Image (cartoon, rainbow, N blue to C red):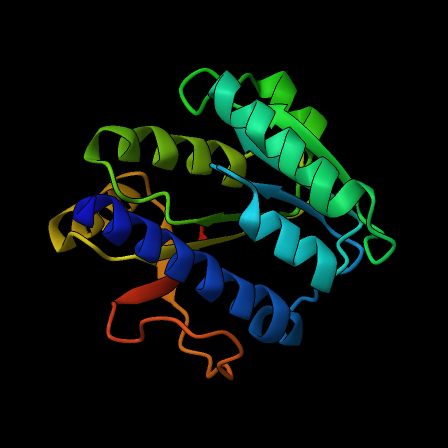
Length: 200
């Protein structure tokens, strides 16, 4: 139970950080309106629900790959967004397997902003994640490279270093965003939480 609580807290912290940057810091540079946002590893949908209710993207695509997770995700979207008068974004849910996603699926999505919260926790999936990000960022069909932001609660420094090294091997550059963001919700600031912008 203690380990489960730590994972839950770290996941919550990662979501809060990506919310801060989407809502407060990122709009200073690119804005979140008039954009198609793809979220990788949406889980229960907390990140996307917060973003849709506060930043008003044109389209928001939740994604995950397990049927039970996708069903829970759809239920949460129905409860929190579909019946909300404050949400103007077009929302959808995609079954997206990082290992097996097709070029046709990525071209159909055509997202110009990619976000994810707390997806860098398992060394076994890091290579798949980075390979997918490389495909998205090097897509020749899109006129402009999409903006990619990954918020991570660094529970295991070795795993996080593995992620950064995998980015380098894939020829992807990254920068840790240092924007000062006002605290709106309480979270454990003693935790190491980083927002990484990834680009080519």
